Amino acid sequence: MTTTIIGPGLIGGSMALALRKSGFANRIIGVDTNPAHAEQALQLGLVDEVLPLQEAIERSQVIVVATPVDSLTRLLPQVLDWMHDGQVVLDVGSTKSSVLAAVEGHPKRGRFVATHPMAGTEYSGPEAAVLGLFEGKCCVLTDIGKSDADALGIVQKLYAALGMHTTTLNGADHDLHVAYVSHISHIVSFALALTVLEKEKDEDRIFELASGGFNSTVRLAKSSPDTWIPIFRQNRDNVLDVLDEFINTVSRFRTLLIKKDFKTFEGLMRQANEIRRIIDH
Amino acid sequence: MTTTIIGPGLIGGSMALALRKSGFANRIIGVDTNPAHAEQALQLGLVDEVLPLQEAIERSQVIVVATPVDSLTRLLPQVLDWMHDGQVVLDVGSTKSSVLAAVEGHPKRGRFVATHPMAGTEYSGPEAAVLGLFEGKCCVLTDIGKSDADALGIVQKLYAALGMHTTTLNGADHDLHVAYVSHISHIVSFALALTVLEKEKDEDRIFELASGGFNSTVRLAKSSPDTWIPIFRQNRDNVLDVLDEFINTVSRFRTLLIKKDFKTFEGLMRQANEIRRIIDH
Image 1 (cartoon, rainbow over the protein chains, first blue to last red):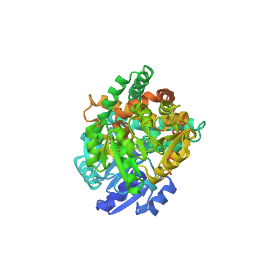
Image 2: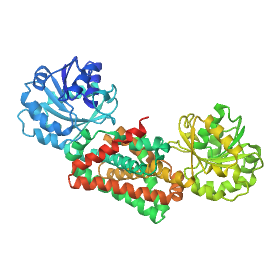
Image 3: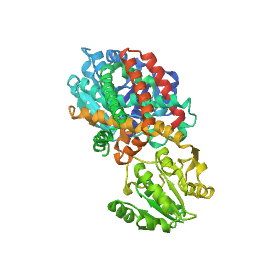
Image 4: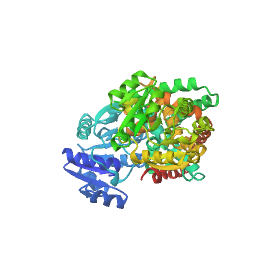
């Protein structure tokens, strides 16, 4: 199938690589408002050609919108306007309520499937695209009742081609869940990086000692604000709720240290150890 | 050299593997108060034999104390008491002020070198021992002015055999530095794991969406309280200082979200991005 990727960066570009390799796409068109990125996507072989948006839509059977979530809500109604019968459009954004609201009531709403493949790295742009990024991971399809059956079927095929399993959630639940398992990790990582970088101003040898544990905790602090500010903006209320709970929990550890109550501190650590059940599988 | 490892777990056991492979140690004696761990260390080939403490010391040229930091401060003066001329003892604990205070003024103080190899994983015990754990990492030698030159020389040879480079710090600076680049990461990771696990009670599908970013941020929450409670106890004051700064930074992000000041929020994220300079090398 001829597939257009709007925004062939980390996510869109990695999809392009896997869709071509699996045979799902025999021709891939790139659309990018940033000419340098468009050129990179061509050079790296992520896309076969780069076209203006309307022309790319005309020639494609499947259209993937892989831009930051703020441009997503502006772009999608436009894409739907320009689509003709039998085409399918999906987004891959990290927040879902806003994009679902942006197409609510659109006459071609049924041609759109709202998805979120749960995969990524701390890098961005076409050069960050890697084959295998999605393999074995989970993709969330949201509010599928509002998509046409044939459109859903094609999207299921697409994610199967990427090696992903899928799950369904409504948009609001999705946004709450990702606030917990993704967005808060990013804020914590940014705050941790900032705390230690501030200290570095006085203690110039502080990073000599940084090792694996520190690196894995601050890895996400390398992520691009261009991707993440729109996400935090759209999912602000959920992120604030989770942030409040996180601050309460950290403050509880702080109080126990002040009181030298290491017995309760240890009990909380053992509870937290339960995370093994989740991430060791 | 015949080497005794007191506590052949993650750190001690990994040292045993590397010291044997490099040829530094031709015979390795294990000492462990936990009979199950002693048996595992033998079975896994980490040590050649297991002996009671005093007998092990008598037969060794180098003695490595690799127990949790609370038993370290009790054990070390005893080990020094039983040592004879020409022997060397080193510890590998994550905090240094307490252990340095515990041997201050001991008549054989010069035979002791206080070290901290900056390497580890979130696992513990003899089964967690892995070859190559220390390769290319940094080891801190603290308060080296109080160690005999020949003892220091042997310890340098030992860390070279592990593939580590070394750096020197005084004990107090070491403890402040590790509060920033190691201890705080652990508390943040524990608090994050706990926050999400609490939420799981109401939302049973929440972890379906956990992916790489979440996993790397909460990985340290799998760490053993038996290792970490003694560390937090000994380095409590530094950890509290850093924790206060971290809570301030997270709260700053929270305030910016409440005020919808995404411009300042983005500025802080770009500052935090500077961490690339540190961890991408």
